[in-house]
Image (cartoon, rainbow, N blue to C red; front, top):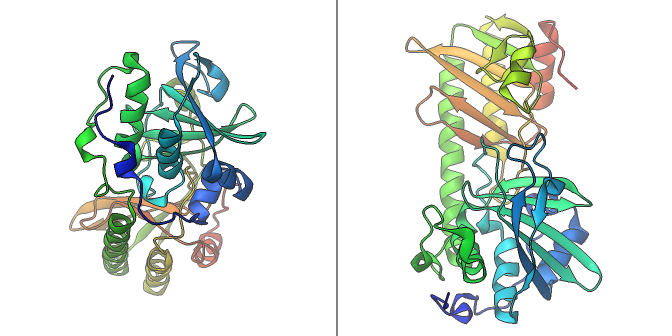
Length: 333
């Protein structure tokens, strides 16, 4: 397939410096791996095909790797730039599917190598090392550029959902000026979400609190074998209680909101979701459910206008754990 655009036109005109952001460091499994990816001078792409129709774990070794294609220097520069830019990743967006990775990128610098698997169908990216998954994240804002380059080399990728090569350029999200604007918008959303949660929760007459097990099920059958009740039909409940003290409710509201407000747009987030704290209360006769993970610093709230997926710091966890403990609830390991 002939190039749809010039790679040189897409590269930034200023010198690119490494963004040592916690989310990027965690994604690549450490600073050394991130620096290998950032400075890679060789990148090979290969097609991936599942060995089994429905793998049990969907790990890196569950795929057959096709013949590798070495990228040209200008393609290396663009792919390297996209993969190591904070603006490529939608840190707020979780993933609720079983990715079918179609392309593997091997980024090399000397004898060091970083492996990145890409699922263009659900915009999911996985970093792997020694046959093990390191982290998974949504790469929505860099998908157009990566899908276009992959399409040049692999005609069997077929049509990719919502991919538009005309969007791949300096105005796309992963370029510096647009990244700054997107971060400002993310900060505004965080503040609005914190305000909505604190106001709604502080006015509740009672709040159900849940200690949940952060189990990820490999199948619906495995989930159904667990006899414990499930929060949001997903997370096993190890214990529950009801908070009715207005002072405790206000402490919960303030703690949850403070973590959301404190999270900076450059703080990053892990590519997992292992929640241990759940909350449910009533607003205008309808239930609101909030689930938060202080391991990977993110949470979700449903049933509340102005709230959805949010990021948080770890600072509220101690105060919340104290309230849970005072109601006889133990946090899962």
